[in-house]
Image (cartoon, rainbow, N blue to C red; front, top):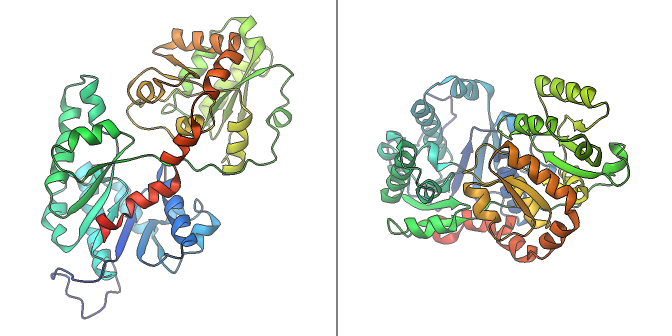
Length: 406
């Protein structure tokens, strides 16, 4: 199916018996994937171990890799062309995508003479028949996103829980699946070890880089004694940006005068239009935007200098890189009072949690009225222990654990 320059003496129907060589194929280029890939590649480049694992990445990743990661291009990093990615994206069914992706993975694993495949999202392929019928050609391990255990704890019984637990159970029973890394759910990993000890816990990595020389107050021309609320990332409905805008519009005038909301990251045209209308309505720039790609150094500068982090993600089951960066820096944070967020912030003194728009408005008012108190509570958090658990080094070491891939 795929145009490969395979060695002529390679029998595609024979199970390989080579020295351990790994392969990681990733067709996605959005969300957490670029960060994970950069973390892995930079670690392997720094350790001089850039050839024991071969990477096939979407061509769309080329502009998202760091200079260190790009140094491995042509050695162990290769890009999957536009035609293959376009065909993959055109497939409408989840199972169809998984089958197409796995067929490519199998062919590349045989071509590269690799006998272990690492998946950054096991969920997407767990129920594919191809993983069972064709998996005799390689061993595999990877990350399981969106732990079903949170649905179980919140008593969200139903089809979603069944599908996720069934996918996890299938992986646990697959003899060639060597490790299932449950992302950001240590309790869930312990619970599901009754199915298999290969289900393990993996912490979402937090890479802390040096902040740039950016002065946030100068860049955005912020008045003195103004409290800044930072809403950062690829902004949109997924991040709850529309919800935040609705709440801001309903704030009392006296509250608006004390605050400025920084929307940092790409916004679509409709959101930018809504921001302009809101600022025009209140008579000053209450919401300030920077609709562009934000470098890691500038991201660190915003995280360091902002007073309050404003997280309003609609998907409350999955982990949040922004939230983890907040905890690593002991910042005051406003976040949803549900699932992952309430679990992660239950013992964090610098958190204000909300369940609806009314409570979100009250959290903003509380952060303005008792800012110093919440900052003091946040500073009591042991960020050193958190940084160690969520370090990039531990993340990479867990994925490439010798007990798993050796």
